[in-house]
Image (cartoon, rainbow, N blue to C red; front, side, top):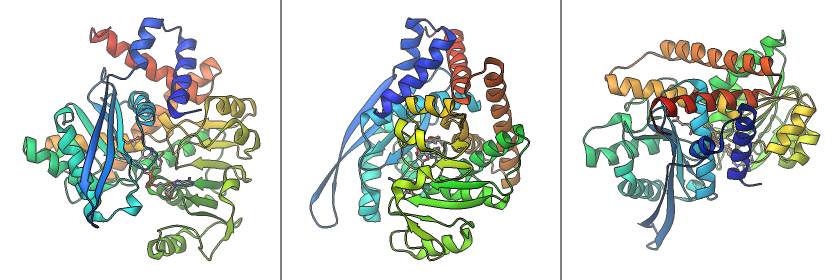
Length: 412
Ligand SMILES: NC(=O)C1=CN([C@@H]2O[C@H](COP(=O)(O)OP(=O)(O)OC[C@H]3O[C@@H](n4cnc5c(N)ncnc54)[C@H](O)[C@@H]3O)[C@@H](O)[C@H]2O)C=CC1
Ligand SMILES: O=C(O)CCC(=O)C(=O)O
């Protein structure tokens, strides 16, 4: 099942349970605008590089379009559509005044020089600068992009529109970025799993985690839960997978990854190499997919041994797999709730940029914890009240909020 079918089915099942009429459903489901641009740049070896950039603006009933930019060879319009819709529901669940968007460039940043990548990013912004802006559409990092690319976006956009730090979030902290944005998604995942465990009268101490993806999201999740006493028993990335049933020493792993040529966990001497195919079905308490979408298929769902699935990635679980997890009593903390920490702190960054004011880390962490725990409790209460999954509950809350904003705004 592709990403858009998967995102649509999650939406439709929740919309059915709310009895949303067909006309409203079409308005809420379909993207507002889809942009595709050609990016042609000279490569270092003298050849011409051809890339395609995308930006899908899904819904702006609750505020400006908001969402990340993914740099990956599999980026296409369908994936951008699915991820943009998820952003609409995510911003509603976490309660930030934005709509949803997503985009990206079909390139492999690991095979590009910094010079090539910078040219690609700048040409992309030259092509889309008229349809983004601090009050229109605010990009951010996603898979394959980071603070460095966000800084290029800010300066390229500012060439056309004057100094505009609020056009993009996730910038370097010392270049109009926010404290705490880099680790925000991992911190939000930690808060969500902590709150879920508390509903079961459990704490993180001694809880075992398997994490797929050790980039921004996976590595910070690992750090926060390990600090709370959890044990990381396996980690996979694009180049390999490692396991240690006694718990992986993260400080040693991070030193190893920093000096390994591919910046990968593969070959880490403090753990055994395992088959990456096996990682999702290893015995553990919490399974955290923090890489690509669509990895938990029905076949994988039948074999998962964790009791909690913590969705760091966007769209990691296919809808039929979701049903199987529910039937097996495995609790899923859904992407639109669990990984909303990134966009939440992006919102704080945007507010700081607009106010030309810098908040200390303590304030960011305090606000993030308050707003995340509130969203978790709302979703949990909805799930308990209707005896439904946390995903269905999160979608129902999000759809109600976007529907109400569309109604108030006279947009139907
Ligand atoms: N960066 C952010 O603030 C947010 C990211 N997300 C989602 O989290 C996921 C990861 O994003 P980031 O950590 O930012 O990306 P990243 O680019 O920093 O890291 C991605 C990680 O996934 C690994 N990976 C890629 N393909 C893989 C495969 N086939 N098997 C195992 N591992 C693989 C990479 O090696 C890397 O370790 C994505 O789904 C993204 O949409 C969600 C919310 C916010
Ligand atoms: O920080 C943001 O604006 C968006 C992050 C993102 O792309 C996501 O939550 O999937």
